[in-house]
Length: 376
Ligand code: OSB
Ligand code: MG
Image: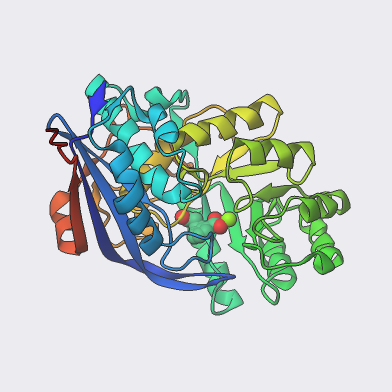
């Protein structure tokens, strides 16, 4: 049993090593909500992956901060917990706000692993010793710039290249990349930039033998994705649309997708991420771990999650240096020449949090403690 004595919220600001452009815009720096929980003198961290704007999902850092402070933290503080798995029930009354919930729940799992003196990956049920890694390459200022980025990633050993795309940055780009690299594992991610009227346009991509097409249509849709999947040879992978296990079941059953991207923040925490993983595994649907431009804290949690058996496709979990000039964990995450990350075998996440560095990046903070109820 563990009891959460205090929850520290902070916002850090961190410039990205290079700008990241998707169909919703360019990100040059991140505003990130970190939570640190305290129990019996042990502390553990969680990262909230909500963006600066509510573009990927309805959440953003400011809604996450507000809901964590006013709703979620009070649900946890002072409670006796058996572990991270106890969180979803405690948070049940709050609808949505899954990224805010995940930051706290994941911190509780991390804390539990530390108290039990086991690796977080093991506590989650992971079995993989190394995880296969891919990269997500943003929309570039030019085709030449893109080719250069791909060449660099392949040289570093990454096993799969995912291209962010949108109308105007798609078919021609895929053709150019395929011409240069006919055999690599290649995929694309539209972040919902297309509509069902684009069905014939998207069907042209079959010739590029993409590993998958990620979230081409509306962020909350299964019906039109199923219609599109019927028209395609290429597998659709859903990202934004999968919020929980029930969504995964619906999407698989309707054949809206044949691959699922699991982001622990998007589904509300490790418990639900494991449930989605298991539901997909039972139905023969492979999954992979998505990324949200995380710092080392979220990245370490993604690595632990990716150690589960059905994370069989290369994830978007890549080296710290791709995102940050200096990460906030030590050592930074590194990828081998064969495009793999070794799952740490140390206690907890297996990485040390660089408190001094976090301190220097902090722009806002708040400590919440269990309010002692004075009874007459
Ligand atoms: O859709 O996978 C996505 C980044 C921010 C928001 C959404 C997405 C992404 C990425 C980058 O693709 C993944 C990463 O390298 O962290
Ligand atoms: Mg995506």
